[in-house]
Image 1 (cartoon, rainbow, N blue to C red):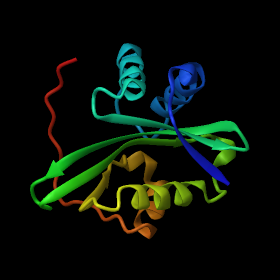
Image 2 (image 1 turned 120 degrees about the vertical axis):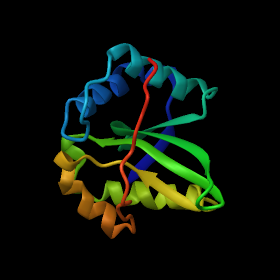
Image 3 (image 1 turned 90 degrees about the horizontal axis):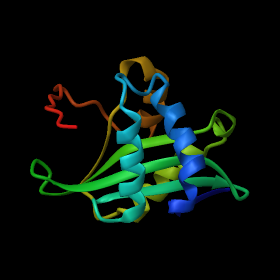
Image 4 (image 1 turned 180 degrees about the horizontal axis):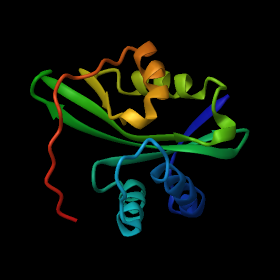
Length: 148
């Protein structure tokens, strides 16, 4: 059974190892400086930046993590939950934990008008899961202006 628990400062070492694995996988299309990854973890555990961090556990062992933000989506007329990141260790994949996580997400944020996530073309294998969970692709690209 999957346990989903708020991250704490004491989770830094194990979560950051998984963050590094995530950022060196096909799920991510560009490098992110380690200082930014650390700041993200710190923001998630501080609760002051609108970012929630969760560790995913199996039998008391941390097997993954997730970062979630919430914002108003004008085109939906309500709250949007952005799944910033979700990661499951290799050994935890194929056990139905991702589906359990999404069911928890949909229940916890039942008031949301939209759930959103990003998926890279190189990580297309996971798209089938997301589609089975009701996600569809948006037909427009994204543009960003980064200020690190």
